[in-house]
Length: 355
Ligand code: SAH
Ligand code: SF4
Image (cartoon, rainbow, N blue to C red; front, side, top):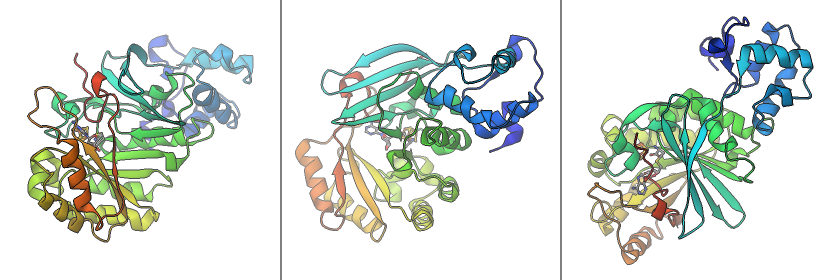
C-alpha cells in the first residue's frame, strides 16, 4: 500500500463538501489512519470497512454500531461514493446479464453477471477501455480512457445488491496488471471477510501478459488464480493479434509464468481465443502443445466472439472440436468455454462503451 498516495493520508480537517474524502476504495490501514487523525480508536476501522463493503451502506446514519459523535465527524469530512447503474440487459439465449455503469466523471464501464447452476460469476472491469489494443478485441478497439479506482472496481459488485455471487473474474474491460495497485487493493477487499468474502481460489485475474507484474503478483499473499491470454502458439501470430507481444515475447512471458507457478505452487490457465484461419490449424495446435510442455496449466479454449467492424471470424463447431482434439493427449487439461451473452454483446471481448 502506498500510504503517501492514499487520500486518507492527507491531513484531515473538516472543510467544505468539495474537499470531502471518498471512503469507497479505502481499506483497513487507510481507515485506521483516518480514525487516528480524528482521535478515535483504530479498531473501529474494521467496523467501518464492514459497513461500507460487507453491508454496502452509503449513509453514515445507518452505521449504528458507531457512536453518534463519530458518525457526525465522519459525515463532516467524508462521503461514500457509488457508481450509477444506467442500463441493464438480460440475454435471451442463456442466463447472463450485462450492466452499464456511469462513473462520477461521466465515463462508462460494463460488468457482466453469469449463472451456471449454483455458480454465479461476476466479470469486473479494471479500466475504462484498454491501452493494449489487441486487434480482435472490442475493448482494445475503443482505446484507453483511464484506470478505475479500487472503489470503482469493487463497486461493480456492491451496486448490484445481494446477488449471491460465488466467483469473480477480472476479465471485463481493461488490463488489470496495468492498473496494479488499485486492482490488488480491490482484490483484497473482495477476498476479505470484512469485504465481500470471496475465497482467493474463486477469484481469477486474467492478463494479456505483463511479465514484471506477473512476478510482482507472485509475491503478494493472495491466493488468486492467474489466467494468461495466450491466444497464439508463435511470436509471429501473437504479435499480430496482441501488440504487447512485441515488447514481451513468448519466452519472456512464459519465464514469468513459470516463476509464478514456482513461487505460488499454483497452476495457471492459458486462455486461447480460437479465431478462424488465424490460430486454429492443426499445426497451430501442435505448436501450442509444444510451447507449454512441462508447464503446470490448463488450457481454456474460447471460440471467437465476432465484433462488428473487426475482420475476424469464429470457426465452426467442428473446427473448434478438431483443434481441441489435436491438443489431446499432449495437453490433457483442455476446456472449451461456451460463451454467454453473445446476443447482448456481453461475451468475452465484446465489451465496449460508446460515449
Ligand atoms: N485484458 C485482460 C482481461 C480482459 S480480456 C486479458 O486480455 O486477459 C478477457 C478475455 O477475453 C481475454 O482472454 C481475451 O483474449 C478474450 N477476448 C477478447 N476479445 C475476444 C473476442 N472477440 N472473442 C472471444 N474472446 C475474446
Ligand atoms: Fe485489452 Fe485484454 Fe482486450 Fe487485449 S484482450 S485489448 S488486453 S481487454
